[in-house]
Length: 427
Image (cartoon, rainbow, N blue to C red; front, side):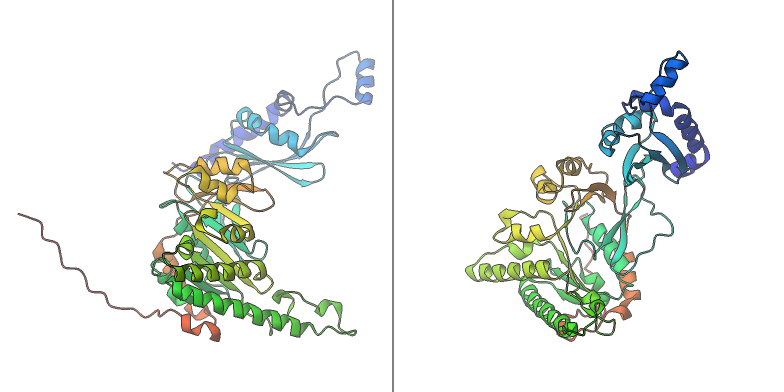
């Protein structure tokens, strides 16, 4: 069954007629009607009839691929919260799958009615293209694309249990970033099995904790050099034009601006695990370097994408401080409520409840939130390993040449692997 085709051919007309006919009665039943003004009461007395209550004015209705968009002007005394509280009642009254409310101007609302479950079979909207460090990676429950904007949210934490779709989200992100002029770096302490297929497009890859420590030292030094470049390019003097004063790499002239760096850390818990005293010392050093990158990396054009199954204070010293710097949060299906709280407790209690309600048969579905308290349910489109690998091979020429990262550049040449001997079944 294709719900989009059914909606556009039959359902849209039925829903539109239903909304137009029942609009006033639904608004009054949901408690969204206000008392009449004095002028209305006076006119009603002259006409010897009962004054009617004032309902929000429906100015425009637009049909989309996923539902209806109502443009509503609120009555004096109303606020957005009144409509948010009544959203569930509006959903049942108009037989919608979901209702999403957004205030786009003082006194004006946009009520988006979702006709069917858009996350059951993810189809990204047509014409959605990304820009530098701003790529669409998933579909939201309101039918809009979820965009990963590194300039707006520089660092992000992605958690999820095994087979929850965390790797699919990461593949989609790498696939969208591959054609852009950015440097992709990876730390994969599972001997590189997750990120090695993307080797043609990676500027650096650290498959062990020992190499990760060395790579982080190089990145911190690279960040220091970029801050020195910014300070040298400012040329602060009495005659310097105000528009030429910059505090980050994006204010530098294009010929001086260094290439942006995106560091992907897969299974961050492996960086915290220790077995000896020497490992503990190395762990503390790596965590310190990661925290420095998270605190200062944005202005230097260096961004973090931290992934793991669980990320909390029990990992060791510095885990909480690092998590506090990761303003973007994406929680896939988790094994316990504590894991969801680690990612979304400081975003919203409702977001934690939504993350723990993700079923097992919906891989790729997640709850995305940020430090502002806003959150939404998203689902990543299926991106196979072959598709992501093909994109990295196609845009291998986009890999920037950074001398400091040359020792960590992965070898993308094919290595022949002997097939294992066939297993003989017993007679």
